[in-house]
Image (cartoon, rainbow, N blue to C red; front, side, top):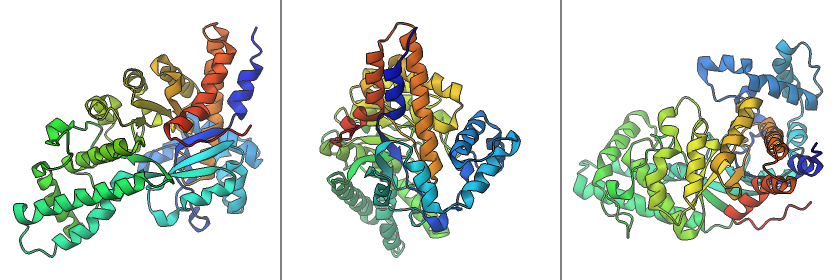
Amino acid sequence: MYNLHSLRETAFTFPAIDNHAHPLLKAQHRGKFPLDAVISEAEGPASKDATQTLACFRAATQLADILQVEKEPRDSLWERVKEKRDVMDYNELCDMFMKRCGIRSILLDDGLGQPELVEDWKWHRRFGCDTKRVVRVEIEAEKLLRPLLESLLEQVDLDPDTVLYPALVKFFNQLYTSLTTSARDTEVVAFKSIICYRGGLNIRPRSLLGISKTNTGHHYDVVLSNLLEIIHEFQEEGRLRLAHGAINEWIVHWALRVAGENDIPVQFHTGLGDNDISLVHASPAYMQPVIKDYPQTTFVLLHSSYPYTKEAGYLSAVYANVVLDFGEIFPFVSGPGQRQIIRQVLDLCPTNKILWSTDGHWHPESFYLGTIQARQALYDVLSDIVSAGELTEAQAVRVVQNALFWNSDSVYKLGLKPDI
């Protein structure tokens, strides 16, 4: 009954803005992380089961098509795909997958893992796309805190009033300055917080943290004990990883304040993640009080907030400053699961507040799979809705164009054209 040629053409060919991804590995480090990382967040003993998921079976077939790997026998297809790509020239491999994506711009969070292993975010322009940087605030905070900790360890007496309090004042002043500088950098388009990994999304509002509504930052007692824990950990293990309750919450509040002052969005990891995450505290529903605290700051809820997609859709529907990214589920979730998630996104979320991403990282295959599977899911879901007579084809086409391109262009103020 419905031909839907325009919808199909748009879904599979319209240029896209990848609003959240990470850099590719350098050629000399291409084997540092297994290809299995593109189809699952599982680590350790659980990772051996990742290849037995519907997501992996589908990805193996799709990659085999491009790599020209014989598909039978299916039981060994994933391993044969890995063998074929591992012996290819790395630049050829990257070009093969990246240039098939139709990505017009990639917004890269370069704070994932060890920076010496990956290419610079500007390097990715070689694929014919624009790239911009997303600043991960916890990593920036750790960079500032390290020399401060080294200085504190030289102190004989860590008196709270005369040593620790001034140190916290200095740290947060430096953080404010650093984040403001980043926010005003024309190459930076957003901040990103991983507090979901560092304690959970149950971020307390300013009133409960003793933060002034008019001037964020003169009541530091709530974080003094956290600082002592960090100092002890740094002294004993030489390790600095900010995952210490109130101090992490304060860092997020600082980022939200600076972002609001400089009109850039803040991305939040929500939902799906590896086993470092507390799944219970990965729901964006916990963020409702802090969303209310910063009405001038745009919150980008990443990764479809899966499995809390409905909660994320609700927040995007009732708060003007919340938008929803539908990434990472490609290719981590099966095809049927992806379509169900897209339907949940569309249940409540305004179609001008839906942003697409690959969450591509390390391997070019992650960008390719994240692109083709998202395009397929959008077409499948919207064609069903059009066929049911609940949407015209022209409206569906516009939804796809917005989700893939125009919404991200607007949220991040990129000023791009699709060039089609």
